[in-house]
Image: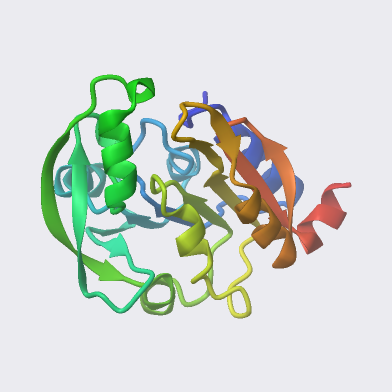
Length: 218
């Protein structure tokens, strides 16, 4: 059974089984829900644990209630010095975002359906580095990242020198203003420059593995 959007968790499970990592640790940024569309719940069910970051207070409460082994944080991931930021709650909670541009595009583009910005709330911000050092000082095996328009900005703040997860699963497909879909080539190039290779792609999400893991999977 897959709990992810397009079976990403089953692909990642194969990687960890090949690497003989029975209980991979995770950092789930933009977790949204404890089980639905989750890249990490399959591993949690099998005894794994890690941290789930979810800025929506309602979604966070549900995750905290059902993922008791996980560290659950009701914060956003900051990419600058701001301690708080506006968070846009959309009609479809899967489209919640810290990006005003992304929220307005969802509201004004028919491809997203009848979307509206229902409310804007202030959410505390923490950097990935702060979260890793405070809660996951030994690193993690898997980083799942889905934050509606801010994925690349967050990756650019990741401390690749100190932390080298075996696997990243990142949303890499973006709607353009004309309604077309396009891969975020800058993000793909960035991961390659930092020693990660594309292992699989489900059109919406890309699964990257470190170069060391890539050689083991060949």
